[in-house]
Image 1 (cartoon, rainbow, N blue to C red):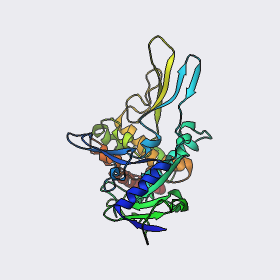
Image 2 (cartoon, one colour; image 1 turned 30 degrees about the vertical axis):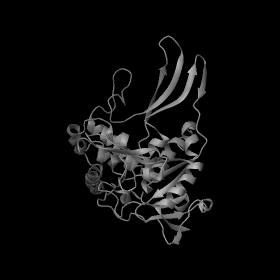
Image 3 (cartoon, rainbow, N blue to C red; image 1 turned 60 degrees about the horizontal axis):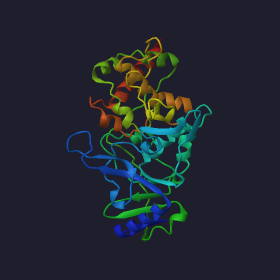
Length: 346
């Protein structure tokens, strides 16, 4: 059932939803952006429907609700420990189609990887429902979700879709919510972004010999000079899942404290360092190659599904060196086509 609501009616519906769920949505934090006098939009708990930022892309991805930059896992005292308490109240997240697909990639890593289930992630994930927010007809200027096939979600993957603006339209998928919303019936379904302003051609690596040659492409050397190895791209990425952990003692003379995990980045110095001083990927180009192949080749090969990258474009938005990931993938695709042709011709 689809309804058209007034702002007052939606506000009332939101208050009813708030009684059931803890609600997360893109929220504006004034004057907290990367540059002077700029705002930042990121996911946070909201208490009013007016706080939802609908017409702009959030600077940071929805993943922060499930995988915050820093997270306490458990508390310890001497030989005893206690896991952190996970809130039992269900969570409702206002997200885009690419966000839902990104969290499905998180599910691959945290719930389906080698038979191991991350209990901390699973405890939050099982309580989450999604409200699907409509995007602009072609997304935003750095989006390429249509190329990555993350522009589409199934009807059973969200409980209602919504367009927020002068007119508020709601497409209710969960029958239990029909009493929450009060409006006039219309025909509405969240439209799919069929085409973006930019498109990406995913390289088709024909065999392992070609894959080995990709590693030595001169293409990567360009980024030895451009990439500054800051890790901004991976923090902003909707699907980067790497983390490290450390113990924080409350006092220097006691064995009491907490274990935390913190987001890690394959672009940061030390990520691949080993005992003895060896590092697998010391140069910026090698690190960018690793991340790129993980996003558009390795994940799909490992899990037999979609590519890890969902085309949100946040890595390009955040790069201080103005490296465009979509441009990089298209350049790689040209080089791989050459390698495939050379392989065929012997």
